[in-house]
Image (tube, rainbow, N blue to C red; front, side, top):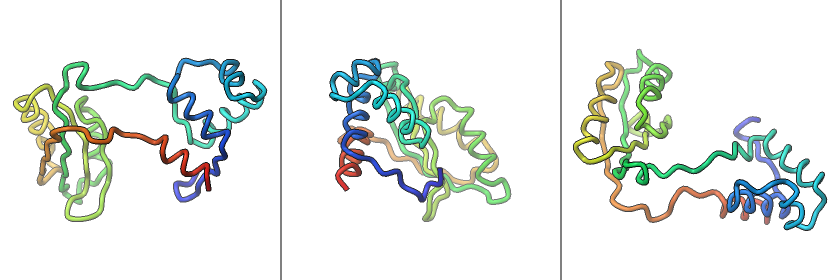
Length: 162
């Protein structure tokens, strides 16, 4: 699906997504019972949401802090244009502590969310990131506290009301 196109969600879609987000291990039959619709309706809606990329998976949400990575930071990178984004992204993808990377506008080229075990370990991760010759400069901001965790359910609810 083209990123510019939007999938229309209705109230049933939103309720299904919310139920699956709250209880990812719930089965289709139990979803149908709780939502008050036929099992086939739930399955068809779920299939359509998966096919259209609205729902991307049912894996567990992992807390980096719970497994020892208590430092979260955001790093902006300026890259050498002759190396390009794809090669830099491949380098970053090989570093387990890089949780995500986005091409951005502005004075930098990429924004990454990274984690580390400590501030000292953060230095090691940053050194590993900037060791690639295609990265010219890095600027790091350490997150002190998470005020709003990554979330999509309020957005789903809002989209379903339109």
